[in-house]
Length: 132
Image (cartoon, rainbow, N blue to C red; front, side):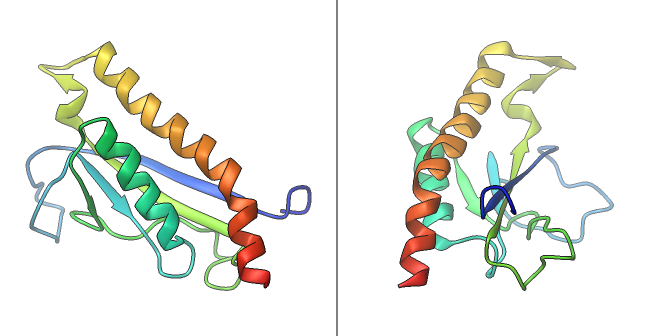
């Protein structure tokens, strides 16, 4: 934060296609679950990620089956320079019968890389809009 004045946290996880006994939430299990936070996930970032994922043919939902995103407590709900988004991938997208599919993994990598690239370009603009 001191060096760049901003920080993007992408909290990456995967989850199984079927609901597990430890899960409290039920409902849709999209290929990509975006976990968001009202304070730390700007709406335009969430929409941009949904759009990028859709261009790769992925089904996306927000905060289902998992919600929220990681933010260090020191900055939680107090420092808008810390932006965070959870990307929770359904495991059957890239893994079947205990094996990973390299082409599918490349698709997921491409989505994450696009998100990082686009956010790196737009984040300063978002910050300037907030300051005006």
